Length: 208
Ligand code: FES
Ligand code: FES
Image 1 (cartoon, rainbow, N blue to C red):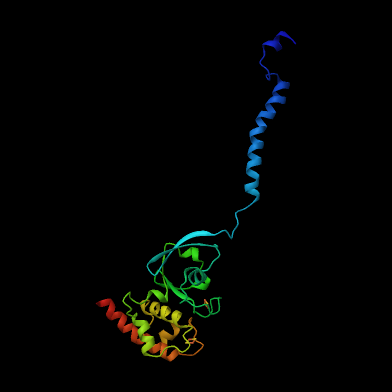
Image 2: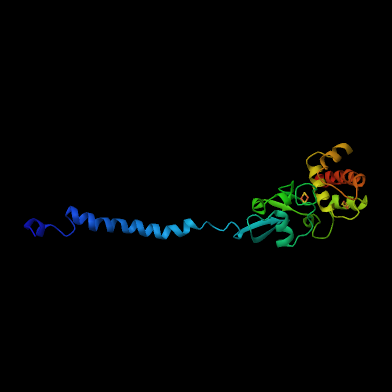
């Protein structure tokens, strides 16, 4: 060993640096690789339940749902509100209509997660706590605007929105703007009569 070598700290020669330094420099990088790889190689399960709070009929409902759950299934299968009906489950019949922030939506085509932070109204939320029916509910009874009743919750919510949108000025408008809600029992003339009655009652209620 030369005098120069004795005074030089261990690992400071180019040969030692390459032998020792390379392993110590590489160690943290290797450690990072070993700990990072499993997480990166295993993406999160897309079906893992997602916790969410849904505002339904003025009450917060906390649920943990598969992120792919529709609002209709969340209501019917997880929250126990079965008023909204599953007719086609494809956006074609309107039986699943609910209101989100006052606008009608097809809950079979709406992901529950997208309704977070919004006000969802279903048929169960229309009557007052004392049992008084919404004018549209009363009008459907007064005009016999249903037979089997399967389409009725969706018809009533759609009709309320139709009036609030200003699309219930005459019979033709009512038919046009209610055309997304099908009725297998063909109660259409009675439904139009009910909407005509309710629109007056709703205007009166707004003035009072
Ligand atoms: S069930 Fe949603 S449109 Fe038919
Ligand atoms: S009342 Fe039967 S489908 Fe409308």
